Image (cartoon, rainbow, N blue to C red):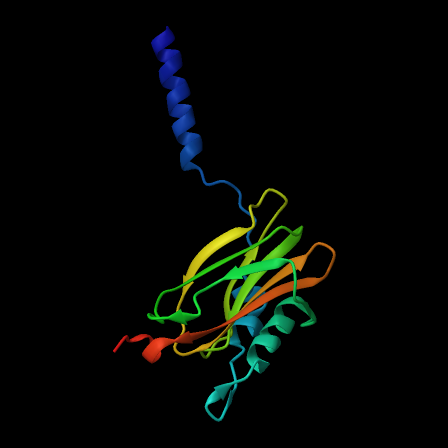
Length: 161
């Protein structure tokens, strides 16, 4: 009798493990397509911040940034533009956090919705075709947009030689 009870509980646990949990995730590519179609703008050979600021406004409805509350770590010079390590975090109470860059044609890189149980410490690798600026924006529950920026050089277009 104990063996049957054990087997039924094990099969029940396996069935629950297979059933996907209900996850509430926003697909920003569908709900806010302007964020993902905003292009960075070249002024001669220099990339401007116009594309990044337009993408931030398309996502959050404002691009008024408070340059505090977000920590950003990235190399000053990236020897490989195909895999640039970017670490960022915040101790603010936030709704979402996003990554933007001005070196590639599209400004937006990543948008993450967070909740009160989220650990707001991230480590990603991004691709940048040339030197530029990475911008991290965190939307606080107080409505403010907290941000950090880092300008970095990509050596030899990321090809290393």
